[in-house]
Length: 230
Image 1 (tube, rainbow, N blue to C red):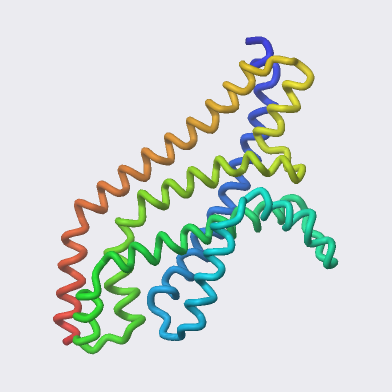
Image 2 (image 1 turned 90 degrees about the vertical axis):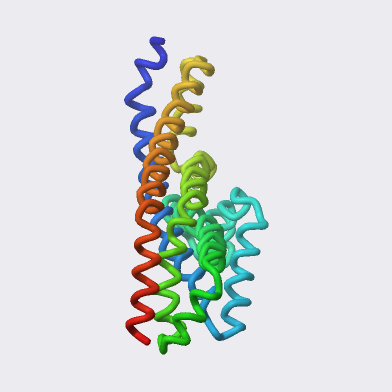
């Protein structure tokens, strides 16, 4: 117990770094993944869709730690030196974006082509249909998968210590090296990860339920908008 009390401020600082890295990477992943997923669904230019799917395949099918090493240790070979923070955010963000892209594309595809055909027949163009009709209905279906991706991203921050970012896991290991209290300190670190991920999951579930209750009204509103536009 003394080891926990003595090292708690040190671990808390590492946890703050963990959350900061996760938040920055999450913003990048959500923005880039949403754009790419929407383009993969709606873009008429086939080579662009091929390029997006190549990006997704590359980042999803190679280990995150290998990607992280390339960002930090590999790029200097071609004259590009990133700071540990920049390499960590780029690695986490692009890795997460590859999953978000598939989540967004899959959710939009799941809405059903009849919705798109109805909008097109009403005189809307492909992008109007995608943004005003498909996206609002697809968003609720994205929430569980996006939540899982956010949790995975937070857990993946534990690998950032390999490029010298003093996040929670690395600080825990450093504290253990001086106290030898491995079990209590690892349990403390695990509890910190657990608390934030449970809170995130709980908030996401409540949001999903709230949107599900209003989803029928949103869908009806979208259909009415199409009818009026016609």
